[in-house]
Image (cartoon, rainbow, N blue to C red; front, top):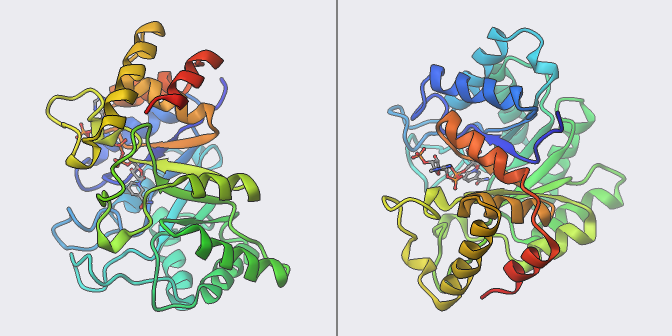
Length: 311
Ligand SMILES: NC(=O)c1ccc[n+]([C@@H]2O[C@H](COP(=O)([O-])OP(=O)(O)OC[C@H]3O[C@@H](n4cnc5c(N)ncnc54)[C@H](OP(=O)(O)O)[C@@H]3O)[C@@H](O)[C@H]2O)c1
C-alpha cells in the first residue's frame, strides 16, 4: 500500500481522547500505510487539569509498548518550546534555549519510550534566546543521533533563514521542514487567527517560497479549520468573512461535486497536489478514513488551476 501523504496529529491523545480512542486511530492509520505521527511535549496543557502537557506522548509510549515491532514502522515527530512555565499559562513558555531543547528532548524520549525521534521541532518563537543558540542546540541533538532531523514551526521565514545560515556556515545540519497553519481558505490579513503569542503561525506565500527555495518540507496544521468546511456546528470564524472566501467556496463546491467528495477532501487533495503534508486532527476513525480518501484523491490540472485562481 502506498504511504498516504498525511501525518496523524496526536494533539488531544490522552486528554480529549482516551487510550481506546487514540489506539483506534493509531492502529487504523498504520494499517492504512501511514507512518508520521505528530505530537509535542506540551500537548495538551490547555485542556489537561494539571495545566501541563505530556499526556499525548505518554499515550504514544503506551501504544508503542503495546504493539511490539510497530516502532520501526512509524516516524515520530515531536516539538519543544511551548510547554508553559506556570501550569496552564499560555503567556510564558519554556522557550528554545540550549538547555530547554536538550532537556525537552530527553523528556519526550522518556514519555515516548524510545531512544530517538525522526523529527524534532522548535514549536514557537522564543524572543529571549538568540536563534543561533537554538539552531546549534537542534544540530547537537541530530549529531547525537537522538533526532533524525529538525524543523521549525510558527517562525517568520527570515528567522528560519538565520538559523539555517548559522548552521550552514559551520557545516552543521539545518532544518528540513517547516510547520504552519494553512488551508485552502485564507483569513483576512487584519485578523489574527493564532493570537498575539503566535504571530507567525499562518503560512504565507513567503513561507511557500522559502520552502521551495531551500527544499524544505511544509507540514500544515488546522487544514480542515476544525471541521468548518462541512459542519454547521463549526461555522467559519469572523476572520474568514470576506469576498475571497465566497469565491473560493464556490469553486470548492463545484470541484467537490465533480469528484464526488466533500469540501474537506478536496482541500486535502489540493494541499497534497502542492506538495504540502497535512496533519490530521480528527478524533474518530471515520475522520481518518475520510482524510485518507482526501489525500489520495487526484485532481485534474484544470481543477487545480480553477482552485488556485479563485478568490
Ligand atoms: N505546530 C503547531 O503549532 C500546531 C498547532 C495546532 C495543531 N498542530 C498539529 O496539527 C494537528 C491537527 O490540528 P487541528 O486539530 O487544529 O486540525 P483540524 O484538522 O483542522 O481539526 C480537527 C478537528 O476537525 C474535526 N474534523 C476532522 N475531520 C473531520 C471530518 N471528516 N468530519 C467532521 N469533522 C472533522 C474534528 O473535530 P472533533 O474532534 O471535535 O469532532 C477534529 O478534531 C494536531 O493534532 C497537531 O499535531 C500543530
